[in-house]
Image (cartoon, rainbow, N blue to C red; front, side, top):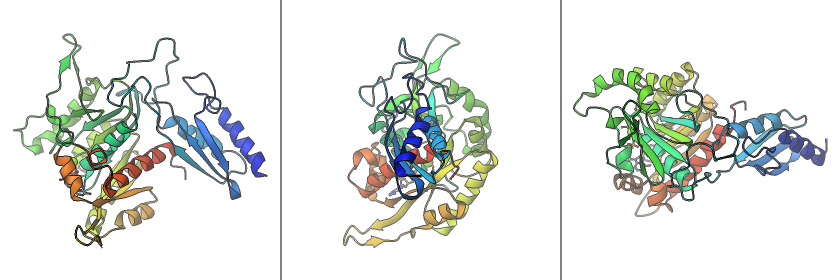
Length: 370
Ligand SMILES: Nc1ncnc2c1ncn2[C@@H]1O[C@H](COP(=O)(O)OP(=O)(O)OP(=O)(O)O)[C@@H](O)[C@H]1O
Ligand SMILES: [Mg+2]
């Protein structure tokens, strides 16, 4: 089949997908752009999903194109939309659909009704940079105009509020019996931490069993509003407390963070198996603390080695989402309450984290069939 003909077939297939808000198909409404058909049936296109839906329409677009005869592979470049109704990333969006508009379908059912995607940031081992990655992904998405929620589910040492320079107590609003907890907000991200609920004097070992019972209620009673994406910062490890968290949140997938050395990789394998057991998709692996640029001579120094995360991704047939270098500014930014992508945006670490954010969107749009 000629490229032109295949190009037309691909557009025809995409035109069959209706945009839920616009009442038009995704091609006419401009969501699909730059469709290119390369040698051997390789198709690429950009997809700008609706603000409520960073994942599922793009997934459908990929699926229909994969079904077109003559297409050998599909690469979707998911572009972040400006969140509708928010002039700035930190503005509160209007609740519910605008008058007269057709309500968008809600991809999540149950717990969090108006959230496009929910992604857990996890690891096998403590201290590898989960919270750092979670905070920076949330800040990166917010800086691109997304409506972002960040749930700190670390029962052992909740520290997201600190990383966002936010240590207020959340407000409770609403009448008696219908109280809602207002999330805090910083850098355009809505934040909530289990730490607010937990008695700080209580030993960590006691907190695990408590969590499974209260988590569901806790999430339901937080007034998140509509979100494009929710990031969940998980506690370290792969035990019962983590498992019950995963089972209580309707996750779209998990990102595994690891340091490059072999001992950490073994823990990640265990973490991946935990998610497989509960049928939660692992969206990819991030290698953190991968190499250090010597501040004196500029030469790269392999502190924990590098490349282990990528090898593991290959071995487990998972996407490799990127490598974040060791950089003192990552820690100082965190300590100062400004995520690195905002506080040191020109650093290699910040650029790497922005790339991880983009790769994560690609992974969400991919239905895992490749
Ligand atoms: N790439 C990096 N460069 C420099 N410092 C880093 C980097 N990544 C993380 N850190 C620092 O390492 C420490 C641990 O990171 P973080 O708290 O994000 O890990 P964690 O996996 O969430 O830990 P825990 O398992 O305790 O929740 C923090 O002080 C953080 O600022
Ligand atoms: Mg942490």
